[in-house]
Image 1 (spheres, rainbow, N blue to C red):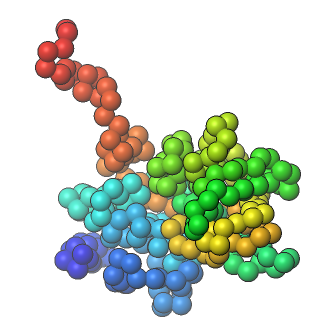
Image 2: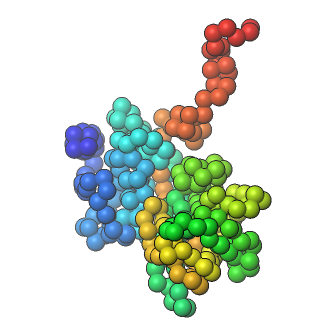
Image 3: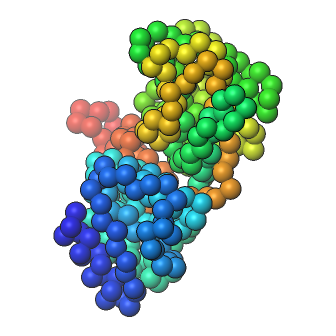
Length: 283
């Protein structure tokens, strides 16, 4: 990590750019909206070295002052941080020459309402999850859309995901893949007791409230993998589109579907389509 940071610093400095660093261990807490408090100057670009977890922490760190992000993958999957170590030089050259696109992504606000007050407010990029928790019995989650009851889930939990998060926890739970620059929310139940409860995609222009009448003692509201608060009877968890947008820099080195094929192993039919027939196949 240190060596890669030094290399990127050198490339940017050689191109005439001023570089300000913030180096933290992968699991250090950056704090929400601390970009200005940490003494960051006016900037045009944030280069993140790490993995998708580092991207999530960066979005939270910037808070309501979002800047374009170029993600360099030093982790494993790297769906958001899609520039590899070997591509850093070329990617920075593309950005410097203006050969890039800025792709905006949905950010959301999650609020926990209790007794008529907002106890917690959290900005997120991937998902809000309501998890049953210990003693690990099924819970009931009511979903209200713009104040109207839509459905009641009886499940181990519910994931409310953005399109960016559709390739994260929601995908692991059987949710659909949604193009990450769309404005939508995905609702994916965890092990639903009712077979007709299936993933649903709806507009991000609406306000969604989740109510758990009888949570377990360990039920919790989780945003982007971090516990926001324990859930108590009568709590209302509100998820809605946030005003700022999270912006990724996309160069000609990567596109949406090539990234899906590479990162998520969409290999079916690719060899045949490229004329690489498996041994023993008919011609």
